[in-house]
Image (cartoon, rainbow, N blue to C red; front, side, top):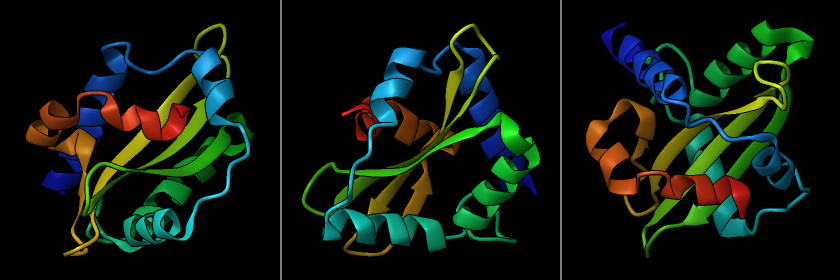
Length: 142
């Protein structure tokens, strides 16, 4: 429970700091893209890990969160970007229209180590947040 609270607290702090992106970035992020096989594998590893909550996979947690929002959320989906030879930055995002005039993008960013299969939730780890800054955002906007 502590870990989940930390993740939610970190995400809340992240969003409260005004770091959710504007509609322009949301529009770029929503462009239809296909993932290459390596990116898809990184996404699959992130989805099946139990990083956010030990009771469910990341995909189950995120799907539950989006489902609770009902029709209020527009899913942008999963993106992945290679960071180095063994690491991918994987991000799931959704938009909630009306939170601000254009809507805000809400991220779930993960560090995926392909050599070990280790998945870490960036917003719940201060060291990772410092390491990547907003670099993981490129996985969504590029």
